[in-house]
Structures are given as structure tokens and as C-alpha cells.
Length: 200
Image 1 (cartoon, one colour):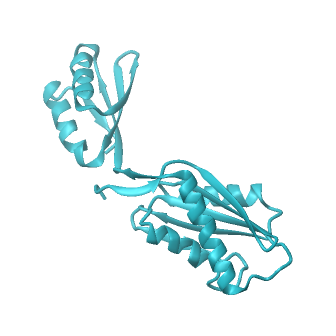
Image 2 (tube, helix red, strand yellow; image 1 turned 180 degrees about the vertical axis):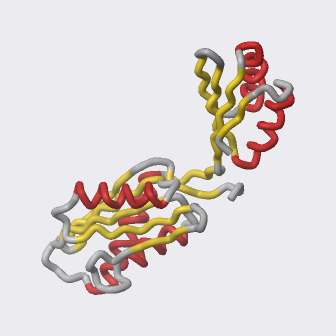
Image 3 (cartoon, one colour; image 1 turned 30 degrees about the horizontal axis):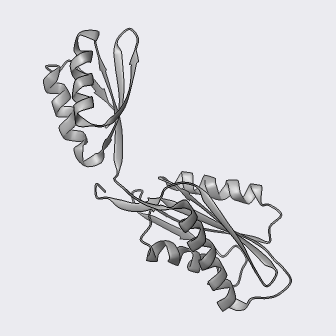
């Protein structure tokens, strides 16, 4: 899972009406199944007066997870069309929930499928799609004598990090997964093996 993938840039929502029914497409990034489920629960709680809250997500965990539910709509009319949009756009680490307030007119399976698809499409468009590279995090703890060379190495590598200067110096490093092992080897070399590296 070191190759890049497409996901949504941020949380967003999109609203529209079809024959009196209001549809709200909620979309968010989610890097774990737990995060996706938490977003679904959050939306269900915030819109607990809605007729339906239809979830769909695709998460690059191990193993890869795809999920959708019709949440009481006719079989195949809601969850599958919502998930299909994420599949067709090849978006991963994403969760969508479509909220529907029933407006008194039955839309039929075809009408529902179109509305649920549109809600996810509009939500994804509002959130924006970005190319993401899988990252990993690890921490490096060194004594002050080694902290300058480790910091210089991290800065020259162009990776994200936070540094905490206490009894010793701890760097929290976020690095593209494909580069993590090489960077840890460089840190070990630069400190003659004195760096304490955790989290991989």
C-alpha cells in the first residue's frame, strides 16, 4: 500500500431537492474503518429526524474494506448507487452518508438511485479530490548532542516533523511510507546508532 491514491481533500456536504424530498450528501476523508463508522454514527446522530441516512465507504485498511447500506430504502436503490460513485471515481479512504427527508412523492428505484448517486457526486465535488501518498509516522528520541544532525537530516529530506525539547529531544516524524525505511537508516547512520526509533 505504498502507491498513491485518490481521496477527498476535506469534509463537505451538498444539498438539493427532488420532487419534495431533500437530499444531503455528506462526504469526509477516513483512513480507517473505525473513522468511517464514526462519521456515519455522527451524521446519523445529527440527522436523527431524517427518513434515511444511507452510508457508503471505501477504506484502504488491511484488508481493503467497502461497505454500503440501503438503510430501509428499496434494495439496491441507495447504498449501491452511492458506493458506485466512489468506485467509478476511484476514490479511497472516503466515507459518504446521504441524508434523505421524504417529501411525499415516491421516486421509484431508478429515481432514488439517481438522487443518491447525485448526492455523493455533489458532495465529492464540494470536498475536492486530491492525490494522496500513504504516510507512516515514527518517533526518534536522541540526546541534545545528536539533535542538530537529526533535525538537519529531517529538514533536508523535506518531511513533516514536530520536535519536543525536554530531558532529551523527541522528533515525531511523518514520512511517505515508501521513504520511511531509508530515512530511519539515515538517522541511525547520522547518530552512530544512538537514536531510539519507535513506531514501525
